[in-house]
Image (cartoon, rainbow, N blue to C red; front, side, top):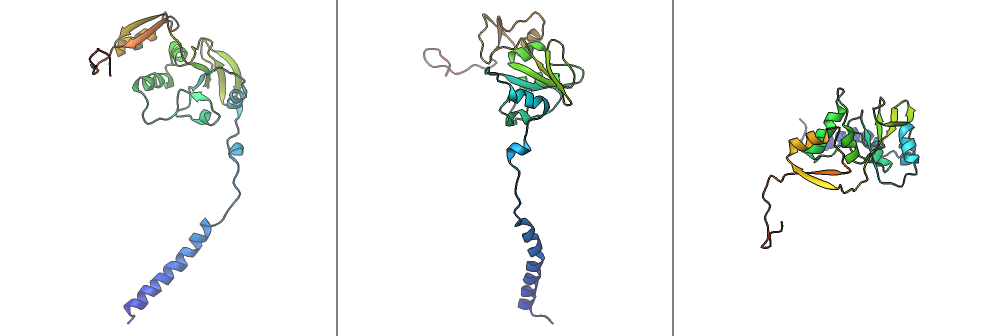
Length: 193
């Protein structure tokens, strides 16, 4: 019969010898590649990264979901993952990602999208580069990051979405404000707090 304390020591010794090979595997140090070597821009992304465009712009990768490669090269993108994405933006992007529909040109202009990466050329856009990944196209009608239209109208959310999708809509001259569904608290002078 084995004593209880000897059994505990034997078990601890067995456990220690069992874990030593596993611990030794994690102790190996290997030279890592530099981030520049791992994330070297290729194809259309290299073309975009090489541009000397001083203007602030965004890109859109039409055929890739949650594509955040552009962020590494300090390119601003309208897509990519975010846990708290605005519902209106998600609605626009979801419509553009479907195979049957493309994002409406007016939304590209409003969202300051100057370059579009896609598998196929899109109408109304100028093709700048083509490689194995697809087409890099320029949107000639993009608006600056901040722009002020000449006139404003107020609409509810559904009507504003439909108005922007009309071909006659021009974001340079007309801005759309959604009606406020809530009454915001005001101070004594009537200004919103």
